[in-house]
Length: 141
Image (tube, rainbow, N blue to C red):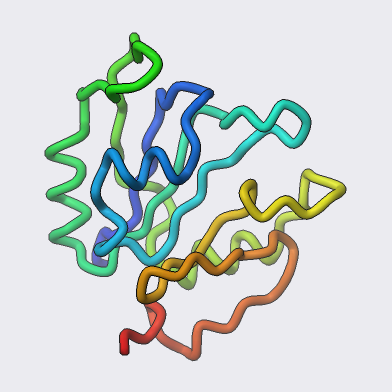
């Protein structure tokens, strides 16, 4: 059985940014992939995000903490819906992005998914191949 490390979070207020969420959730040390899809024109997020955790236990802990919780900013009215994503694992997420055409005509790295390696945010360009060195997660140093 595949370790469940990938979560989908729904009901995120549209004004939230990746930086705001990573700060409020305090999860950056445990996550190797983060994708908050945004509208190319308005820059508002589409109210959902995908996170891949390095360890299944951290994903379960995050889900337990945030499922049915509310975010602090912008008077969030809806509680978050945190579920295990249908697609699991970093490799599967990257393969999906490789086969998906980019919705935006200009590259705004704030709109792109990111790999998080040693605190660095590395944009994952939609529609392009990404090599993670054959690892399920980026290598830790």
